[in-house]
Image 1 (cartoon, rainbow, N blue to C red):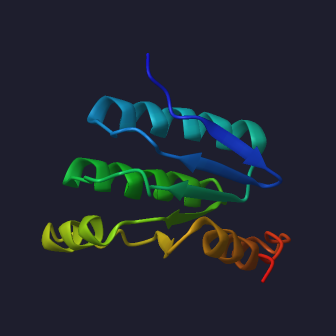
Image 2: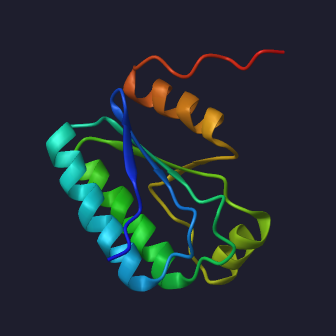
Length: 127
């Protein structure tokens, strides 16, 4: 069965979606992430969707549910790397992803999580 890796970086879980996210895989990710949150008691979840070219309403709802589950488990979720076409599609579908903070890239997402959780963020990029 196909799975999306979930990495632990300090108190943050990092999910990088680099494959097309179909319905079954989205549900597996939700289950895996819930279990990993329970095991690690992470304070933040960063989901990188830069590899997704399409994000339909089911996947949008699944991401919103993941953020809701994380919130109930005392973790903040930040969604990063959304392509402009994907953002436009979500708005056209009437999906606002309420409860999910967003950032343009992983570095900005890590900074948002650091602010939200009080944990040290990623070091600044060299000039």
